[in-house]
Amino acid sequence: MPKITYNTHDNETYTIEVQNGLTVMEGAVQNDIPGIDADCGGGMACATCHVYVKEDWFNKLPKKEDGEEDMLDMAFEPKPYSRLSCQIIVSDDLDGLEVNIPSKQA
Amino acid sequence: MNKTDALIIGAGPTGLFTAHQLKLIGLNCEIIDNLDKIGGQCIELYPDKPIYDIPAVPECTGEELTNNLLNQLKPFDIKFHLNERVDEVKKENDNWLVKTSGGNSFKTPNVIIAGGVGSFEPRKFSPKECEKFENKSLFYSVKNKSVFKGKTVSIFGGGDSALDWAIELSKDSNVNLIHRRDEFRGARATVNKMYELKKAGKINLFTKYQMSNVHGNEKIESIDIKHDNSEIQNLKSDYVLGFFGLIMQLGPIANWGLNLNKKTIEVDTEKFETNQKGIYAVGDICNYPGKLKLILSGFHEGALAARACFKLARPNEKYRFEFTTTSTNLLKRLGKKE
Ligand SMILES: Cc1cc2nc3c(=O)[nH]c(=O)nc-3n(C[C@H](O)[C@H](O)[C@H](O)COP(=O)(O)OP(=O)(O)OC[C@H]3O[C@@H](n4cnc5c(N)ncnc54)[C@H](O)[C@@H]3O)c2cc1C
Ligand code: FES
Image (cartoon, rainbow over all chains, first blue to last red; front, top):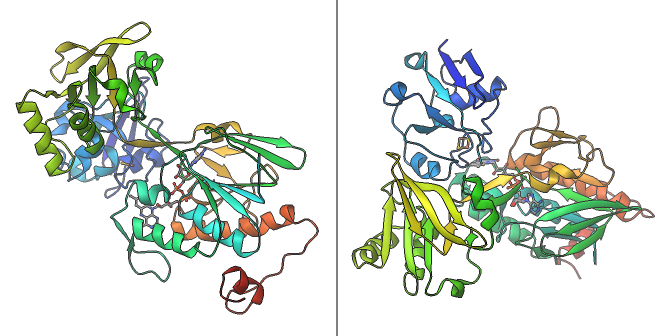
């Protein structure tokens, strides 16, 4: 299974195996990783699953779909490498992906 | 002081159907919601998206679902209190005393929390310094536009609210419009109008900038905005407006002495009662083994909570189970029989 690394805002690092087909958001929520709220359950309607993708990974991810950028407008402190973790689907290609969790979701 | 048999917090689909069930069994109720409109997530987050799993409704949008639920409430007289947040729920003898942000208070034996993931509140600026100016010279909605006349107003956001206000205020104020990227998600025509005003020098546009700091003592004097490339600009500003949409926050519900599990309230599955007698939780906000955050589950939960309310509201009467098709009582309440 692909391994995904989540770095929390207070410098805790969690590296976990996430099943193919789940989203990066689901990987965090199912493993009780703090800092990803995912209030809308992956519906791209809340922007509380916001993460900063490690720079070298950003361009390797499948592109944002329509609407994700609009939702990111509402995220807390969006930056150039911001993504909604519920829109990143885990696959073997993403083995080793690293994301940073913002200080707050709202 | 308003008195009612049951008070519903939240006008989402669950709160609406729960009201139907209460009225049907002969109890009166009132509904409070922090939003300015009825419908909860369905209307705020996805009014145009079709839903396919409402029993016996093969397809309907969030807005259609809300309208249908309201239609179903037509036979009944139900008071809605919108734009008000429930801030306080306190015990007083056998009743609950409920206070709202709008200054209303209610006395009721039954409080039904149908609060979803919490009340919808505006998303705020991230710099801490912004807080002290809130509702004085920094706002997340416009109540009285005349205060901006002849002033410099910095507006943040990329959606219709930000664009509409930038266009409107550019008539009598000096307007800065600031957005974190080049594209705007507002309606085409609105975006074009804004660019025209920019060309005409009526709107100063700053894209790829975000709020970085505010300066001033009693009032805002200027703000710092930061570009993606870290460059900072200082803009003189009398007022600041932020339009970043709404977010659901559990808010005051956390302070009412209820058993919470993350952002949900633990209930039993017989009455959907919380650890406090006479306070129920239904819909997305409740939690029990096997809970599904689906609209259809909220309907079932509301129906049972309504029956539980009967006992406390009418202690000397016995609740009788009846069908709407055949019960004269129910048909009268529905206005189908004299
Ligand atoms: C994008 C998306 C798609 C979805 N699709 C489906 C689907 O296909 N099928 C399905 O069954 N479900 C779907 N859902 C889930 C469904 O919308 C929710 O289950 C449903 O809205 C829950 O209803 P509710 O009445 O419990 O809460 P909500 O709809 O969240 O309403 C709660 C209301 O309570 C108010 N409130 C909270 N606290 C307070 C307070 N203190 N004072 C005053 N008011 C307060 C809030 O402002 C809000 O209006 C979807 C959700 C999303 C986000
Ligand atoms: S979980 Fe709500 S947008 Fe990702």
